[in-house]
Amino acid sequence: MLDHVSVVMNQPIKTGANPKTAPPVSLEQILKVVSSDIKRLESQIFRDVQTDIPLLNNVAEHILNSGGKRLRPALVLLGAKMFGGVDERVMKAAQVIEYLHTATLLHDDVVDGAETRRAKQAACRLWGNEVSVLSGDYLLAMAFYRLTKLRNPEVLELMSDTTTRMARGELLQLTRSFKSVNEEEYLEIIINKTACLFATAIKTGALLAGASGKSVNLLYDYGMAIGVSFQIVDDALDYSDEVKTGKPVGGDLQERKITLPLSHLLEKVNVSDKKRLHSILSQTEIEKPQIDEVIGLMQCYGSITYAINHAKQYAAEAQRSIENFPETDLRQSLADIADYIVSRQV
Image (cartoon, rainbow, N blue to C red; front, side, top):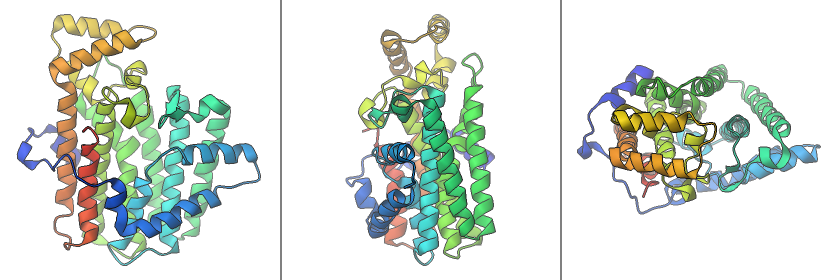
């Protein structure tokens, strides 16, 4: 899959192949084809996470209720509906995906030393790192417990592989240095830490609904492409929009995360600007004046635009993956999700 997606990253940008960038509908409208299932899922997510430990309940409710759009579990529902319908097994799988995602957020915030998550104070700041890590561990354990109840070896193997890849992606990101960067490394990181969960979500729904063969693989390709697009847009927004990320502008820079905008900048700057950029990245703490300076360089060298254009390419790739499916409201919803993801920079 890495080779397939790398082809897209290395292609010249073709504006004619880009999807429209400002769909006139919200994500809630896009997902109206599964809106009743999402409402039911929402109540089940909160009901089933309850334990006899008040502290754990508080942490789980805090992050589960922090404004997430439930896009990943919605993909499980859409994948199933493409091939029949949503039954209780599909609902349980959608819960599993959300619990896995939420667990990684709890862990990531500890690793990153995050202050906020979706414009709210991060759980690790409210309850401490130990509570956040253990709460994330509990959600992971509960997710796999529920997963075994599905009694579907193919789905279990897929989910196990995905969680392993997600951990790999985070470790790769931690070991990446600004002194040696390339886009292929960045792509490998986001495929593993983000995109594979999107792909697994929609493939899981399709598998549980009885799909197989080429159709399942095409949906997996679709999920992988929108996942890559989603992460690239997130990384670009980190340098431009605190409102849409819910995190302070430049947080990735402060954590020395070499995302696509910074990777592009490091490759394109002239000698004097590169020396200054390396000086900033070598500082013990990177403050707002340095963040503003780097953003200015990104604007000068077109690094944010470069990233957004690549996100549009992946959104277009996702739409091509589903173009041979029947023309239904479900297929249109999948196409609109790809548009929505890249519209977030508007």
